[in-house]
Length: 499
Figure 1 (cartoon, rainbow, N blue to C red):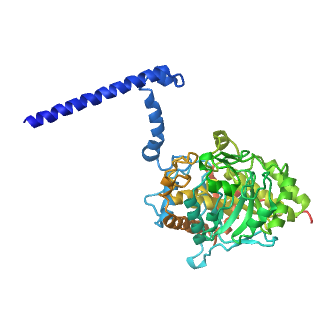
Figure 2 (spheres, rainbow, N blue to C red):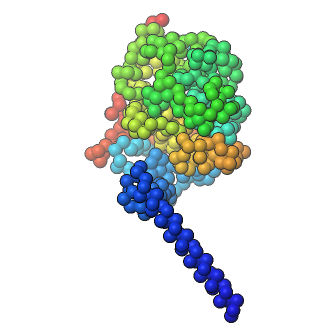
């Protein structure tokens, strides 16, 4: 009995101490909140005003996991992410009870099924498509779906390694992003597209200009199949790349040719390119130095802007044209960009792609210039729409990030990515096991291609590249859908100016 009373007395004293400590802390916080001048809420409502910040921070978590419906969340909803996750794990993607998608949203693509689709033994897979047929070393690209630009630096070493190995297994190409070519891009043995941004990382001279010697050395790698001159990307048109100093390790600094630990800010455009003529000159020079296909990546702002490119090509002749044009939509992603550019600048890929395809075809360049679509295209319907709109290839970055395990934590710019994808913190990188994740990358790519083939067969064609605009209907605000071919009638090709 005495022992029990002693225990109770001790607990009572401990409780009183804890309560007293809490009151003391509250009093200190009360005084601090009253004296500070930065936050009006905390100054007017000491102590309890701090809960506003806490709830705002936790609100993102609760919305993602508890409150948002499967089709509500942005930039990618739970249904999209779960599809990628199941595909990467090799699980079936069948669902029960009907679609959860609201088919009445304006712009929703609906594929027109055929009354008599081809039989199973009449279908086929897409054949490789040649890019840069007139170059010394053309590229026969095996897959219409590939990995878009993600720089080593913006993403981690194990992430690049997993993408490289997964790309090799799936037979897709891997774009380096503007951060230069690292050994980890090459180690998997996949086809590589070397992207050259405005800072010309990896191929820059001491003054930041293009080094022919380094360009030639990059092209000497057999696996480097093409070069992409990046003019703009969807999340930040008119703004150069941003790599926070926390991510600029010694290794990354050496690959890029920059200082360790300092923010890496690329110019907002290529300093040696003032107009479309300069751009075509640069492309021709790079093609001569490398002997490999050279193209561009850009975002469409106006029809007249991109039309000026084709006008310049027609004046010079078809041989001056880029071997490919990657069109990124204004909804494209990035690790770090100003919100006004992410939200407000650049045409959506849904509007821009048909416009550019029609301009190319009207210029008679459909067999000379390949069109690559990029920008939030991660699920089978996205790819099938892009092919029907006229794209020759589709690339995705965030889709493959999801296959690596991305949970859309929105920490890409803070070096605290909890899945190890966009961080150089070794503690977080341990969670990304290359031997497991590369298999998911490959399965995701293969599953997506297979599902797009399923859509193609359902509309009555034998393989995905036979999809045309009349196979897709787009929902209108009237509540009715109309064929995409009515909204974007295919352009009639014209002859290109003679050489």
